[in-house]
Length: 203
Image 1 (cartoon, helix red, strand yellow):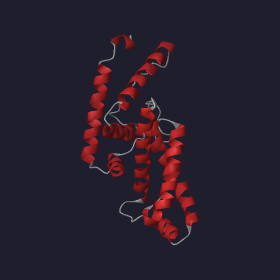
Image 2 (cartoon, rainbow, N blue to C red):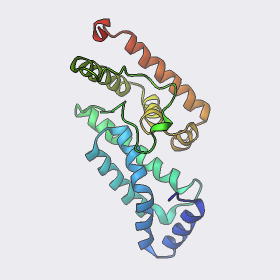
Image 3 (cartoon, rainbow, N blue to C red):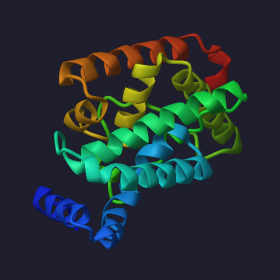
């Protein structure tokens, strides 16, 4: 069931009035979506669960001071994005990698594939083709991981979490034009990486 602004305002009001148990409803309403965002940015189930749990704990402690300048949805997503960003940098310092499945769409959202998404050749009919596809995905994953932070986050939210430009702008607190510019820049940088791949990979 889709959460409406009215529902959120009611939950927040009850929470602030002392009924802390309503936070369980907030958790039920948002935890799955927050996990999708965290997983898209981190590519790790364990790290994503940790980030979402930490985000919900922080939200619980801060909800009494929530002023409603943004929607609850946007507020929660910003907390997750910020924590995922910190976790990502911590992992990179420890030598961890970003693990993204470029061919996997969210359940029930297969029809929402971006028409301008980067194409991974379908070589699934043979072991050799599967190996080539896996190699290409690894290269693209590394390419995404090496993008400038604001470009990488925008690309992940668009191509992994399949968010709209409007939602991305809201989550990252920037203009839609900025989102489109970052995505265009990220695609061009990835295309340059792919153009430099040894042609023998596809032979």
